[in-house]
Amino acid sequence: MELLGQNFGSHNEKRTIILWARGCGKTYCMACMAIAHFLRSIILEAIYFDELIKETEIAWLVKIDKEEIWFPKSQCELDEDDKKVEVPEWLAIEKGLV
Picture 1: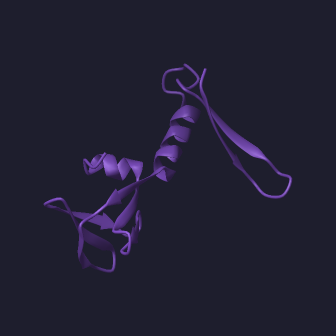
Picture 2 (picture 1 turned 120 degrees about the vertical axis):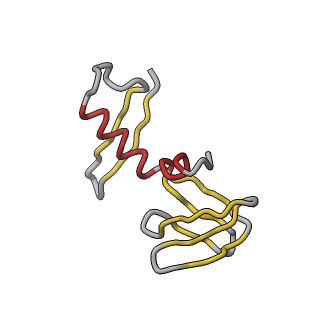
């Protein structure tokens, strides 16, 4: 089976999250569902935009192709020089960008 692992911790402490490609095999396993939800929240997608149209205290409005899309600052990071927004994978999917 294919494994996905990531090390966390400091100094000599080493903790590893390991997921089986198909989870543990149990339907609705709460541990597998929680880990999958966590990973979806930290995996970032780089979305390139054409123009920063507007910025408010809580969001950026950017133009991608001919479409205007809002990105919440609480969930994203914007690099105006590279014309790139880094967004969680779930948000990119929700907005139809991946």
